[in-house]
Image (cartoon, rainbow, N blue to C red; front, side, top):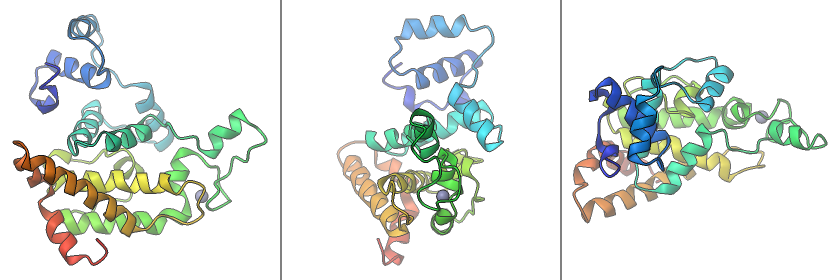
Length: 242
Ligand SMILES: [Zn+2]
């Protein structure tokens, strides 16, 4: 089960199977028997985890558990690179030591954003709401539209958490998810910088990932997975900065 579970479509599982799947996904070190016991003994069914509830409260959104699971599963499937999974999970878990959080630990440390110097430096502000990032996220939105011909609304649940309607069916899904991960990595890479990262940096990171995915596909049975990148090639050929 532990070797093949990433390749299972959770939507096709029975209710109890879906519960097991979710429990395995969010507790990857859990042994199979413990997982089954824990799932069978959970009479209330799967429930949202604390970090999910925190995001829902701070953003004022209420995705379904299936939407949360899809975001996590498909992002994890979008690359073999553990560093990219880690970057996404850092965001999900609200891991970053943003100014508002540091201020609670060290009251003498300023709680406002270092970039705009005007608003509380919460994780939502540092990665999304800061006015100095608005052009950056707009450029990311335009890039995604160019690749998958879909305009995703500029809302943080999509760009930060990957809770995207019909995510499973969007064209070039892996390219889109890797752009979103690369955007957040680029913001984190410029920590304490007053300027936003450039789109060129994001696309450069995505191209490195695409190169690695191609190399991986050559050595095994993963060539069909490159279908989920199919518009990236034509996009980068027409985009001088990649
Ligand atoms: Zn700011």
